[in-house]
Length: 124
Image (tube, rainbow, N blue to C red; front, side):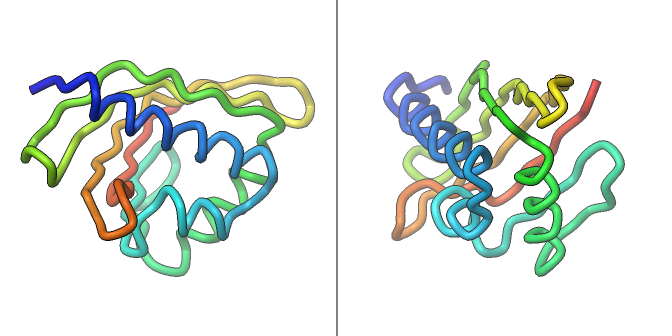
C-alpha cells in the first residue's frame, strides 16, 4: 500500500541522510538514519553488518561532496511497523564526477522513529 504521509516521513529522513553525508557525520547517520543492526548489500560489497558498516559509511562520506536522494516509491508493508522505499541516490564526488545508485531501503518503526534496517543498492 502506498501512503503519502508515511512517504513524506521517509523523505524527511533522506534529508537527514544527505546532510550527514555532506558533513561527514557518520555518527549522525548511525544514530539518526540507520538502525544499529542495519544490513548493507550493494555493488562491490558483500553482505555487511556490524562494525564494517561504519567503515562503509566513512568511505561514502569521504568521497561525497554532494548527495541528493530522489525518492521514487514507498510501500507500507505492515501498517505502522515496516516500509520499503525505492530511491535514486545521486552523488557528486569531491573531484566533480557523479554517480547514481538505485537504492532499496527497508525501514522499521522504532522508539526513535523510522530507521533503515536494510540498505541494498546497485550502481550503474
